Image (cartoon, rainbow, N blue to C red; front, side, top):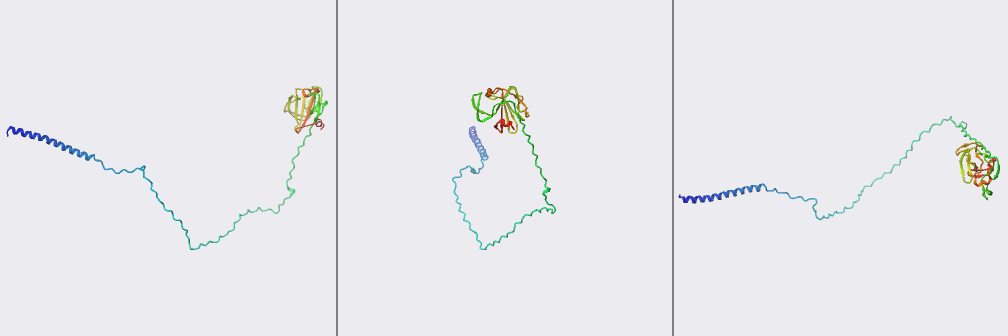
Length: 259
């Protein structure tokens, strides 16, 4: 073979070699792609389960047949009703009575005698005149009497006894001093409660008194002295205005002192 033929043969094989190599590469790429597709092929998935929240669609009406009425059960055999047995009610047992001794009898003379409670003796009320002197005005609650001081006619709830100023005035009976006060109309006034419904009042006294409110005093205890502190009776001069109440009602002091 000459040189020209060698060059043609080399040219042919040189070109075929290129194509052979290209073919090998294509085949190799196809094999690799095939195995890659087999590896990534996803597994078949089951159909999804419909959720409970899915719309079930329109509800279908279901008709329920009406129950058949119950039929009475009738037995041909008659039922025998027995006559009830009435049993007497047992009475509760009565307790045995205590035996009464035949030789024991009640005697009224043997009954204890209750003595009545002793009656406490009521001490008589000791009454003394509160002042010795001349009566200048008498008790008058039902008839009007002339008042020389005020110059008019009015009632008079006590008696007025004239005496020298400073003469001692005593309690008409035992009791407790109810009040010692300065009255705007009757002057220095003392009241004594004798605890038996009687209350005595001593007015127109001098301001200085011998007792205080709450003092326990006997009959004849010095209360104060004659004065002329009563504005309503100032025209009489020095005197004692003396009045008496019985159970809240005014009574004649002259009758009270005469007991």
